[in-house]
Length: 123
Image (cartoon, rainbow, N blue to C red):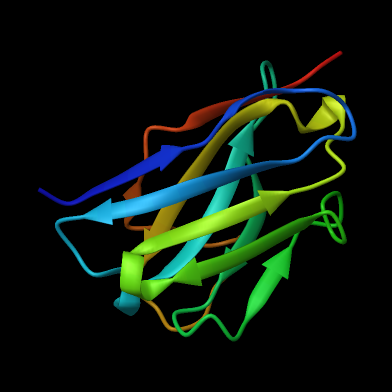
């Protein structure tokens, strides 16, 4: 069964850091570009970041540039999103998705989605 599983979400204070992970089972992430998306209550889902198949290309939403870093460890079949200097407006459910493509984009369809992990930034 092809599956993406996010983990690492939780409650963190403003200014804090959190790393969320996206692990694949049943397929090899080497052949997929990966995107991170988020959806806050009452808002539409938005793209946060994505990484190319090789890891050499990345993109970030303007709202997270300089604070978030996406990277992948193909040996572990896992992609990570390191989130620093978190703000209350970063509160959302974070989803990872895989796309059978070399290049990444936050504005196209994805083939597989995880179930999401909750990130809450609050004092």
